[in-house]
Length: 186
Image 1: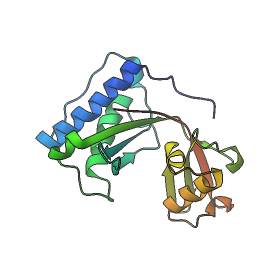
Image 2: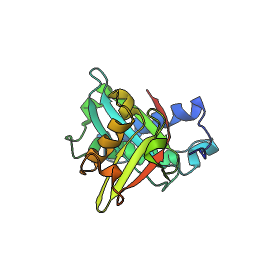
Image 3: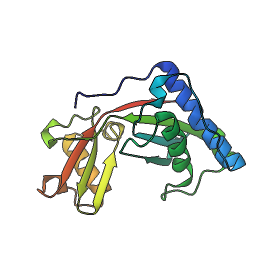
Image 4: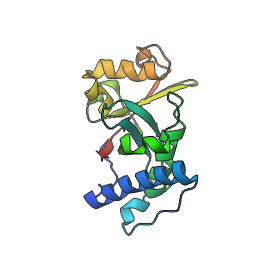
């Protein structure tokens, strides 16, 4: 789990937050999104990313989407995933343009997925992805911290998220992957 992409600078992080917000404003306001450019090479590295949207005042989740495979440059992935978080999270109605001032953006840039043994999972460091048959579920590293879960509760929680029995991680048919994330927010 030690192989990690190069860390993003504070300027890179700020640029990506601006890209996420502009992509949301353009898509929800005008229905189209411009291409984004940046001077930093780090923003063109391919990385998987999640974007979490919360109500600025209450902290309640308003949308979260992401990808587990690196498919495009980080700058493009952030714009695309921010829009998906606002418009394509089945748990919530789409975010409206009028809501945008009340939306708080958090970005998680992931390291590559690696098989991980349950005893090696570190709460607060690792995110988890469990796969068994047609079922899969993912929880970002901050989830068990937010809910004050220990390792076993975290393992159970990712299985529940996948629609599996909570102890499915103990099953020989379940595959468990760990990853780390660089997380920042507005």
